[in-house]
Image (cartoon, rainbow, N blue to C red; front, top):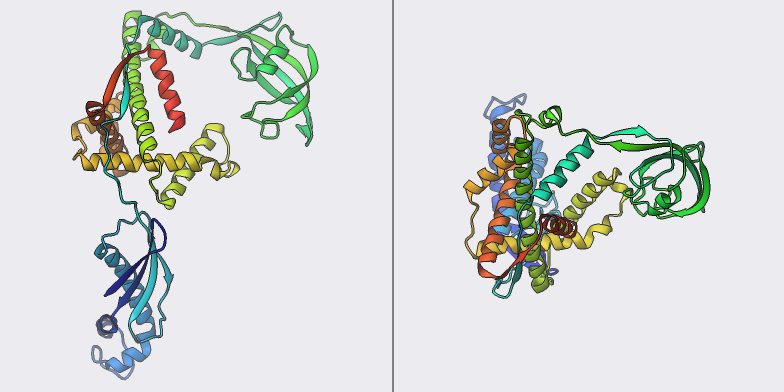
Length: 436
């Protein structure tokens, strides 16, 4: 087999592969002999059919089959021989002539991974969060748990901050009426809905009151026809309600699987959960700082377009699920830059692991899986599920390897400990999540 490689772009390789006719003939003869042992042709004894007859009857189909097999196997042999690192499956550009009895020649293109640079982390600067879970953080979480179980009671009065207001409205935009018929119902909690203009409009209003005004709807408003649009709105207050928080009594505590029913044990459980959250958030903050540093130094690294496109699709699906929309309703190009940076940083982190002989720590993988499993009622079954599913296991291994790389870089970079509160670390981790 002969192979020539042409560099058609930074990461595209064009392979011209030639398989000698003798190799093709040898495989065809072997396959025809196998067929001759199995088929029956009138006038010939089984297993005694002349090769010429077999070739006349089966030659064309056998050639097509052998050519397809040789093209498939030869292109991967060629990739291995040339020490290429394919980022996607090769594409056959020029198929050979099935009727030609000469050498088998075809052209394939393949996208490859880039040549990775030697990565120096000596100048990387990292601020390492130093935070603890305070009693006030536990208090805040207990209040959040109460809010999750709160009930809403009707109130007879004017709308205030914290009230839940149910309105029915109709909006007239430049593109028409929304809804086309009837009225739309909307519930907002004054002070936290994110629709500040509407919140200000309902303050002081009572159930049964109505108002007409011009509003600009938020960019991410649930009704796509109104998102980011200015409209003349007519609405009526249908209901006003205020929250009633449950008492933190024994029944409330037991509802969170704290069997003792004591506040002390609930606070301990809440603290443990917050400490796990803080640990994970701190890791996210450190990783984002490493990613930012790598992208600043190696932001011009070429990345495979096929992998970037796949990452764009993943990001679009995730955004669509979060917004309750169909993926096709969101432009794919909106995720191009983010996807490119995610792929680039992933390649750089993997290269850091390779260059510094960092291998996946099985014990850390086990601990990570057990940490996830602890949040379920049957943790042992969850652990078994992870180890029985290669895709799930690999996802955890990838996260653990990234954490090991971050740990290694933290040991070799210029690190400054930075005192932060629990909330500041959580907020920084959330911001990091939006960037990555």
